[in-house]
Amino acid sequence: MNHVLIVDDDTDSATTLRELVRADEFSVAIAHTLRDARRQIALQTPDLVLLDLQLPDGNGLDLFSDPQLVSDTDIVLVTGHASLDTSIEAMRRGAADYLVKPIAMKQLQRVLSRCGERTAPTAAANAARAAPRDPGAESGRFGLMWGQTAPMRRVYQQIHRVAPTSVPVFVMGESGTGKELVAQTVHALSRRRAGPCLAVNCGAISPHLMESEIFGHEKGSFTGADRQHLGFFERASGGTLFLDEITEMPLDLQVKLLRVLETGRFMRVGSTQSIQTDVRIIAATNRLPLEAVAAGKLREDLLYRLNVFPIELPPLRERLDDVPLLAQHFLDEIANREGQVRRFEPAALHQLAQYPWPGNVRELRNAVQRAYVMADGETIDALWLPKPPATVAGDAAPSTRRALPEPTAQNGVGEPVITLPVGVSMAQAERLLIQATLRQCEQQKERTAAVLGISLKTLYNRLKEYAGDSPSRH
Image 1 (cartoon, rainbow, N blue to C red):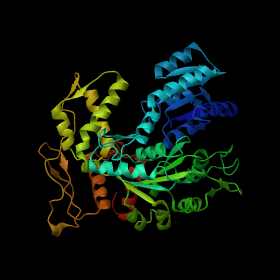
Image 2 (spheres, rainbow, N blue to C red):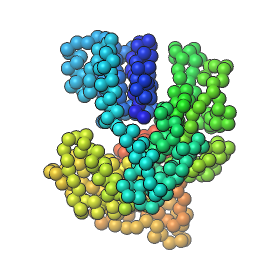
Image 3 (tube, rainbow, N blue to C red):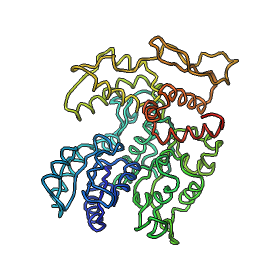
Image 4 (cartoon, rainbow, N blue to C red):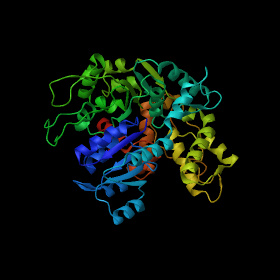
């Protein structure tokens, strides 16, 4: 389902617009200030932003420079203060359209129709519902997911079985493996597909605001609560709620989430009345669940309540035969968006299939986009693609099994290589990779997060944990 963010300080106008957009089966969020808008974008990237110009804390045009907006998000200005200058400035900054209040319904429907055609979720849902007994075996596509290797076909079979039921789903996998796509595909195949499918990144929300964002709050319940706020549980009613990075949720809030899962009821912050909820929960983590429990990051009782139907996504290095298919899919997406067709040379595809992809599918997408930009002509060669390491990890002697070596070795092209000892845990391997990448990136955290294919918030959380484990280390 496409997601629309309405940014308007006029409560009545925003509410009316929300009802009009909902009638076209879009999920909707409302923000009344630029600050609220940026928070909503961090929570869930919108496909379309309906943006007012005059806001209490600035001009709506300032949102165009927000780094959290993805390149294919449409921004449409909706204002009662139209002028030629603002129209020209909006178009110069990349606005997709410009609507003047009062909005004509035909104009709004045109904007929504264009957004729906661009993302085309219905086609993906129909393709998934029509999946054969061995989904993904022939076309390599299942819903919003791509891959035709045996590990991915097992994932497709699990999704195909669990989607029509109402049981909770727990998705496990490294960062960048496509956990949110699993949630969207489960929703598209479920009986709730006509309802909203909302995603919450628990690692991107301040712990002080998380309860309010998930359960909502009443007006006056705390300083700054100048109006009633509907949380994700209310907004996702009748649909699916995807809780990503569940281990980043504070433990006291995990207790409240557990109660909601057991009783089906919750209370807004500042309220004394419980509200019935009708939401299917899909949770996800990039940690090993039992290790997260042992580390005090996840309540054991909540794990068993969420882990009714586990789905484990394989890392890309365990399905390298899917790399050419994925790379071509990403290249086609970019070509459709940019308007210029390019193709891979066979040697380029071969090199992509030899790389271990520590950042998984997200890293592959970024690599394809960079190669597309750097290509001189219609073909993409191997020059700007990642080069496979010259050494194989895991060759350390058993006597050094518990050692945590510094990654100072060099491969044939002068790039650092991490040699991991046999038997090292996933948590230790992740720590080594993050710390080595941070050193390689000269302590630049934004660059490190981009190379690893994780959010900056997740990187900060990991570094905070490592500092807590070893107080003397910086």
